[in-house]
Image 1: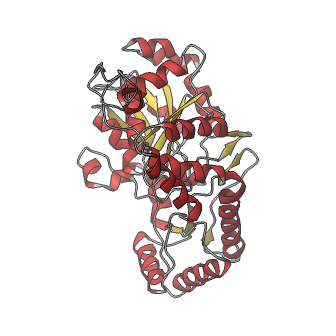
Image 2 (image 1 turned 90 degrees about the vertical axis):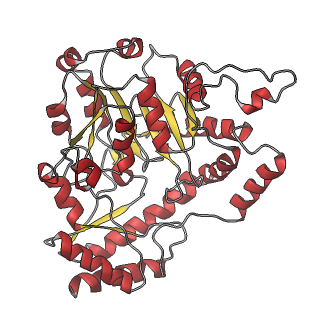
Length: 402
């Protein structure tokens, strides 16, 4: 069976984890801090905080910004549930909008249509690793007419003076937009290092701060780090110093810190990410494209343009002219040929929780059309050329024998 997306775990990763275990320091400590610094250097942003998941990273930022009851956060309907769930956790309303037909990313015109006096945050999602149109989004929130709609309710919001752009960059570490890497493209971005991501720490994530000059990134980092430790103003490493046991709880915070075990995996992954992992993933994308462009029924994904280079996270092949039911039958046939595939993503308005809140998939025709025809193909470091051929053969025969 060709799996869908197994992590890359080899002796280098194993040895680094063993080194951490033997060091006697396994929770948040020196390796986590080193990993943060290396992410910052890699992405070109101002400061980075590692956390235990992208989900917690998104929520920490929303809570720091004061998002709560009566507020609205605009995000694409075409995303994983975590993007919207964190908004619900904060007591705010997710405003789901449709996406672009060509690249699955959030539609700029739909964002603009849905901005109200209650809008506090826009959360673009870099679907499959392709960056959103950040120049246009950043220009939109800085537009005088949009700023006039913004109603700040706390000092942080007043300081920013406009809608916050919080990028869900779970898929896109290493992707580029006009020569700049994700993490440095807007106010703040959050990466995921979950087991199926390009760069994994098993679980985990990182908040990449890139706020304008009126914000002190170090101060924001320190506050959110404290918030990630139940509001405790000293971490375990600081408390371990002689006579430094006493600490204070300055807020009812959360448990969201990354451990050194996780960071040790990340350090290895990041070291070989750009010059090894991304190269291999791009080769797989290009191999799929070379094969599927022969078929009229295949709608190929965009993964490079003049302005953008993907992180090559998901290869979302679409089948022209099929229904959702037919797509599902094709997937079943592919699995029968011992090839694992997936679907990214079922739009949020199709899930019971969001349907019960009044969201209707009929209001998102582009998202539904994309979803109903999409099949995500295996992409991972150890996928061989022979494996790629088997995947292509399984897909082609399954589509053409529907």
